[in-house]
Length: 469
Image (cartoon, rainbow, N blue to C red):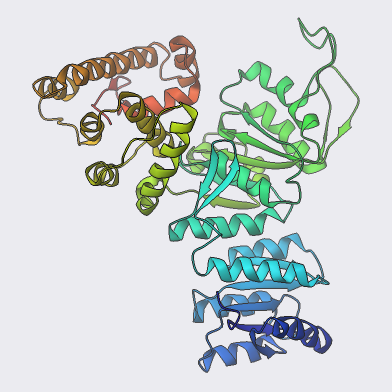
C-alpha cells in the first residue's frame, strides 16, 4: 500500500500522541489524531475512512475496547491495532474477539511499529508478500480467500499472546498447519514445536509419551525417559485429536495447564515446564461435553481462544493455488515432471465437494501424478451414480469406457476396502480405535476412509454403506 495511506491515531496521552504521529509522518502517512474514543468515533461518523486505526486500550470515558466495538459497527472492514502499556492477556483476547488485527505494547521501537503497519496495510490488499507461506518442508499455509485471510490475521495476533488456542475444523482442513503458523509467528518460533496425536497413541502409553517415566514405573521401563512436555520446554506442543484423550489423563493435563508442572510416571519429583499448548479436534464439542468424553473444565482452559478452519468446499477460490503449489512440490519430491492442470481438470476440482478436505486433495494429486491419466482423474471427481447399483454400477459403466479396466480395478478395490471397514466396525460395535487396529491402519486414515466411502452407523445398530468420493 502507498505510504499516503490514512491512519487514525487515538491516544489520551499528549506526549505519546505527538511521538507516534511524528514517527508516522516521517514515512509520509496521512495522520489524524484523537485524544478520546468519543472524538475518534465522531471523526468516523463525519465521513473519515481510515486505512488503519491505532487505538489505545486504556482511556477515560469510552475505553479502547468500547471504541473498537463501535468502530467495527460503523466500518466493519476497518483494520485496528490496539496499543497498551500493559500486556493484559484478558484485554488482548477481548480485542481479538471484537475484531482487532494486532496489538502493540508501549513503549515500542519504530521498527516494531513499521512492521505492524506494513503487515496490516499489506493484508488490507490481500497480500502477505505471497499467498503461499512456507512453514517447513512440504508444509505451507495458503490465505487466498477472505475467510483464510481473517484466520491468518487472527493467528498472527494470538501468536504473541501466550494462551492456549483451540483449533477446530473437519478432518483434513489443516489444523496442524495452522498450529505451525502460530508457532512460527510467536516469540517461541526458535524453540521446539512438537505434535502428539492423542488418537494414534494407545491410551495406556499416552501418559508416558506426554510426561515421561522413571525406571521401574512399569514392566519394560528399564531407564528414565523424558516426555514430550519436557522435550518441548520453552516451545509449543500441539495436542491433536484432544477429544480422544482418556478422561483421567485430561485431569492431569488440566493440572499442567493450571500450574505448568507435573511428575513423571513412577516419580514423586515435580518438574516445572514452560510450554505453550495448542489443541486440535474435529469432534462435536457440545456432544463431547454432554457425554463426558471431554472434561468441561479442560475445555474452558483450552478455549482461551478458538480458531475454526472452514472446510475446503467453503474456500474454493484457493483450490487452483493449492493444486499448482502442491503439484510443483510433489513433482519435485517424486522426481517426476509436473503434470498440466487443464481447464477441464480445474473445473472438476472446483465442482467436487472434497469431503476429505486438503488430505483428499493431496492424495488425489498423488494418484494423478503417478498414473498420469487426466481422463481418469477427472472421472474420479465426477458425482457417483447411486441409482444404478452404487459402486458396482459405477464400475460397470466405467468398464465400457477407454481405460475402463483401470477404473474397474480401482472401483473394485474401493468396494472391497469399504466392505472390510464396515465388517471391522460391526465387529467392534463402531469402536473406531479397535477397528483401526484390526485393519492395521492409523486412526486418522480410518476416519478419512469412513468419510470417503460414506459409511455411517444406523439407529438399528447396523451399518449402511453408500458409494463415496
